[in-house]
Each structure stands twice: as structure tokens, then as C-alpha cells.
Image (cartoon, rainbow, N blue to C red; front, side):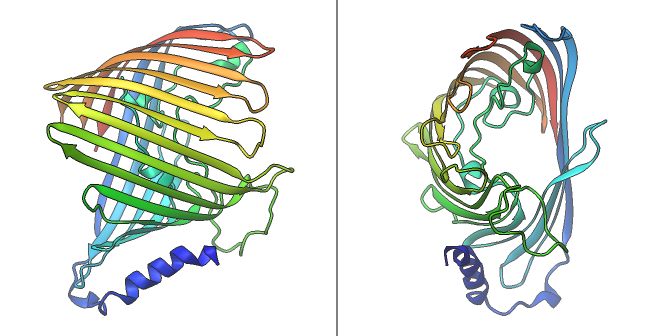
Length: 355
């Protein structure tokens, strides 16, 4: 019955809305957007297995298409399609969903992140593309030192961009909440293949529920952002238990300064071990310049124990609407139980163009 919850929310939203007078509403308006992020990267790192270039170019590119219209009854209806578009990597769609919004909130239906990530509170960063909650640029080649560190960000996104139903409340007195349900976290769409197999061991998890809440408001001259998220998923591989993850975040802003921290725990479906993520950051805005620094720790006890620490400082310059130039320096070390340890330093200079 739980699986019917969000479908019921969606149905109630339409039932509570007067009959649609679509004939007099404006047609669907198409919007094109995306980003290009390109960096020159200098790296000095351990490379016991394979030699690594000192200087290289790193980039990430996405484009998206939004089509939406507002009906006469006030309901906004639309669709969003987003794709990775890097040269050599092909053109691959990674998000595709419909959305419905009004005074009652918003519903997303299709391939999109869950609410535990969508409204997760991130710590301030030196350069959010490099040391943010969801990394776009990662300069180190861990495989060249014979180790597998995994991700070095801290987004809580167990359900990935798999097909799901999400409901977000409207923002009320600074508060917003949400819930997502994902039948199968396999990141694949199912159009003509029929319903997926139950207990499909090829899928990492199923029946994924995300819950999250966020507050953003002012207390005198101080800006306060708080958030929490929880995810539970049925693990279908092996004999693992249900997977659970949760996060907390807080950021305080005052007179150009922001300071904050984020914590996440993910048990990976293992009763005995888990993965902990800690991010702490501070930034200061001076006109078009933002100076930032952050510390990141990931303690992974699942399988081979790996303890990763990263220190980053950087500066961003806003050259114009959607255009910024960025520079950062980071040091990362990873202690691997029973294996090769790793340490490396990276200097990155680049640009981010959002349109």
C-alpha cells in the first residue's frame, strides 16, 4: 500500500483542481539551458601502477530542454530532458521527467534525483564543481596507484536518477519537505519491456523511499539554512539487509561570511560496517569575488577500510551573468588498510558557463 501513497497525492492534486480549460492556455514554451565546465589541471600524486600526466584538461558539459505551460486553472505542466554532452563521451540522456506544480507544491514523475539529494544542505565550498556536494571535476587518478577510493563527494542519492514519483511541498515560513518513491533503482527507463521482475538481483536496490526537510530563513541579520534527509531501500543482491542512509546539514551566513557543515551516514546494507561523510566549509563574498575553503572526510568501512581526507582552498570570480572564472588548490590523502596509501596535490584553473 505504501507504493500507492505518492500516486494518491498526485491524484488528489488533480481532483482538487478545477477542470482544465486548455484551449485558452498558452502553448508549451521551450527553454534551452545547460553548462560547460572546463579546467586546466596540474596534479602531483602517487602513481605506483601507472604514470599520470602532470597537466591535463578536465571538463563536464550538460544540456537540458524544458517545455512547460501554465493552464487557466493555475496548474503548471511541463517536461524536462537533460543530457551529458561531452566530446568523446557521446550524447546520453540522464534525466527525463514530467512535472506538475501549483500552490499545493510540485510533483516530479520520471527519471530524476530523489528529495534526499534535491534539498540536501551542502557545506560552503572553495569551488562547488571541485569540492561541492556533487562533484563535476575530480583531478586525481586513483587507479594509477592501484586503489579504489570511489566517490569523493557526499550527495545522498541512493535512488540515482531512476524512474520515481516525488512530491515537494510549497515553501511555508521557510520550511519545505518532500518524499520520493522509486520502484527499482536501476537508472533505466522501461517503456515497452513491461514491468520489471520482482527481486531482480541485477538491480542494486528497490522500493527506495526518500524523505527530506529543509529550512531557510533570516534571524535578524543572520541567514540560517538547516536540512535533514533519510533514505531506506530494499537491497536485492546477496544477503544484505535493507540499506539506510541519512544526512544533516547547517549553514550560517552573516555579513558576507558563510560557515557550515554536512554529515551523512550510509550503512550500504551492511549491519557491521558503514560509510561516513563529513564536509566543513567557509566562504566570504567581496563584490564579484568569493573566497572559500573546505575540509572533507570519508571513512569507508565496507570491505577494505579507506579513510580519505581532502583540504581545498579557492577563489571564484563572477565575470557576468552565468560566467565565472575559478581557481583552487587541494590536497588529498587516503589511508588504505592492508593496501597502498595515496596522497596528491592538485591545482585547477578554469571557467564555468551556465546558460
